[in-house]
Image 1 (cartoon, rainbow, N blue to C red):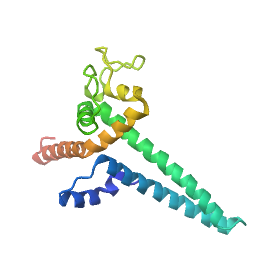
Image 2: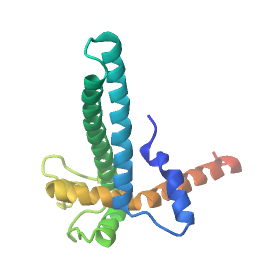
Image 3: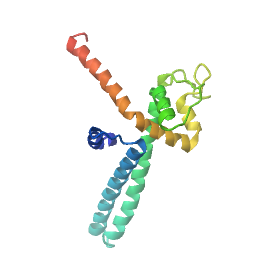
Image 4: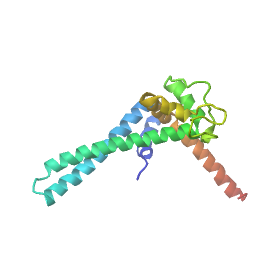
Length: 182
């Protein structure tokens, strides 16, 4: 499966070269439309062709049914992907996501949250870490759909920065190999 963020990366780079920055909400909408449109058309065409060849009802009704199912599948799939990304960032990069929530979404997490990465010391039964503080990912989940939506947008806002961190880490590994240290 192709990474959806890679699909629009070229367009993002073109717009960035023009001096514009795509807001997280606009990126979400563009990727959502692309994902749901692709799955809707694909499943609709497959169902329509199946209806025309194997069923006696013709291609239109199966196409419409397949498109509806494909659209729903695309919407749910894209939501799950965005939610997983946001929750991964909340666990691995809680300080970066919390900063993005504050600066871009104007949603300020409580000061007593544990902002250590990798969910260190978290206890599954009481949603607290070893110090008794709630972690950012648990705070997001407890806030319901509203906090989760803001976390998704915040994750998309800081996504480029996290990708830059990954590139930097990879470059350090490459440099170690080229220097013969590993």
